[in-house]
Length: 537
Image (cartoon, rainbow, N blue to C red; front, top):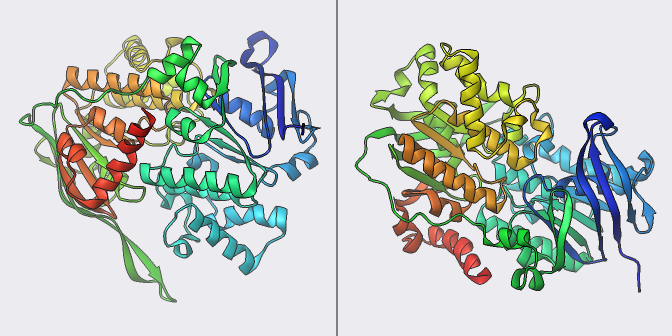
């Protein structure tokens, strides 16, 4: 019997010193054979990503250390391996798709250079050969107009497009083992299905092994040969996909399988006061070229979109990556320049001067898609959440601010004891909850929610959906909810706008759009989300 490709035995990972040590992973053991897919499943903070980063030796040593354990790759010990060995392994034999592409991609380099870097280091590819391989990879992961995207920087791409660039980088050298840490988190349902099909195809064609880290049990059922369920740094159950889904033994596994956002039972009153409206919103980005830098054409990120959000109501905005969803939200808040009319509480937002707009910001909040990129690494949780209170409610005493912050933090499922910690000390899902608390602490009238549950595991998604519903009911909040996750959109939205290439292709009451879409593009989106759900049930 051949030896496993990867063997992890009794792995332990701790952070900090002996006086204040946190045991993140304890007694973790599993193996991966050539061509096998193994999934690590669990909630945020369970130790999944820390285990994967240990394989790649990417933890922040010496702050992070391994009190015990062994990681063998093809029989060679990786724990404590020198830089020369790890340079040979990383990106060549073992590659990793990271969870947060905006913070994993270099903001100063175009995507061609970033993808080609691995080809240059491990294969010596340069010039036209490297460019052609980059184009092949971009096409492979579904990025349209690949040649025009070569000079694009990460900030010029949508969240889903950045994730696809990360996948292209990981697949560049056709690794023997691919570690995929939430590989489809930022992807819309149609691209998610394509990426999963791509990974399955590459796995079969290249005999590639896959270590899949995810909170999405639908993906696990479709992709994994065997599953290891983690909580509190330990593996509590493992087995084949069929066994775990049909006869789960551990209570925690059963809890994961039962957790998903429930559909919205009734829609809110559509006659409440209008909070914000946009008419004929346009955001066009010029494409310049030639010696004189003349504008040759435009990228029409948002092209003549009209929307209205009422108090106590949620308008869901759906569409594939790059369809203009986030651009619309930023334009309504005047965080980017746009043409068209924008009215907030009856007032013309475009007519406001800088100071008036700043005063208005207290009532207009946003939760960004990438929590790590939007939270200052130099500020504690307390400082992050109270910052808006200091600006907009300066009359509050220090104790009153502290009380408001504690309440907001506890409402999103975190403990008050975490207030003195920093963003890098939290998991992706926990960071998203901090971002939600920062927006909610000011009790705004309007909240733009840009993929607020994309980094959250299923049980926390359900909690956040319930939290958002409760806050909306209590304070009559208006939500503009931007998401590629149609199950969450169904759970929250009263109305739905479907966007494609910057334009609205269909809009109406949520129930009508979901159950009886009139446009082919909408039907494809709904089929990709809910037909998949039916097959998994």
